[in-house]
Amino acid sequence: MPCTRIIKIGFCLLLAALFTPKALTAQTPPCTVKIEQLANASELRGFRLGMTYEQVKVRVPQVQFGQADQFGIAKTSINPGYDRSFQQTSFPDVRTISLDFLDGRLVDLWIGYENTFKWQTLNEFVNRMSKTLNLPAAWSAKRNGRQLSCDGFSVFASLIAGSPSIRITEDAAQETIAVRREEAAAAAEAMVIGDLRNKTFFPSDCEARDTIPVPSRIAFKDRNEAEKAGYKRAKDCEQENAVQLLKRGANEVAFGHDKKEKVC
Image (cartoon, rainbow, N blue to C red; front, side, top):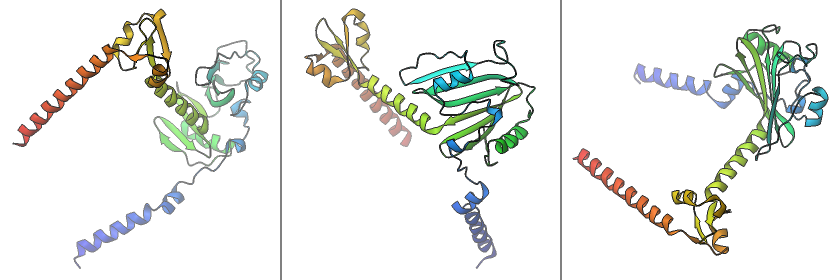
């Protein structure tokens, strides 16, 4: 067997050994810590994922909560570093804390520290936070920071304005938000607008729907609901759809002709 082939086979076997799932697991130990096992460290200044509005209010009596949006998300923030109504001894070396709630539960916590915080470099911040929160040190690089994915939550550390910050996010909550947004987008796409004056309806992709006066509009969740209410598809939309199909067909023919000429 030629020497070069032996070398190639040996190199491939070496790569296979290095990148097997077992080898990768050994190189980067997964974080199996659960949210409820996350240490209640003083560096988090009394906050933890899962807190309710009432629990946060006990910690910060002056905090104000806005109305939750259509997805159940409510966001607020406090600025101990700027707002002198906060006792500095309760939030030492903290500039800003952002709190994101889903259905009344804290699911995303971000803390930005001042330049007086004890750990200023990113490496030191990550190493010390890992020990403080009882997390493994296997953080991976992400954008301009470090991230650690655990069982049900993730932690991200970075430097903001030269000082460290940490974000702790609940994974299930982010998935729920994504699903709700997708469902809302699908519902908006399926929704049709009816014209009370002539009982016709206009799909979401029909530009003619914009000509309906607001007082004459009625919304249906989809075409079937509109038809059950006695509404028919507007002729303007049928004509518009026909024009779009003709344009699409003409473009496909032109593209096919150009492609044929290039082949020839």
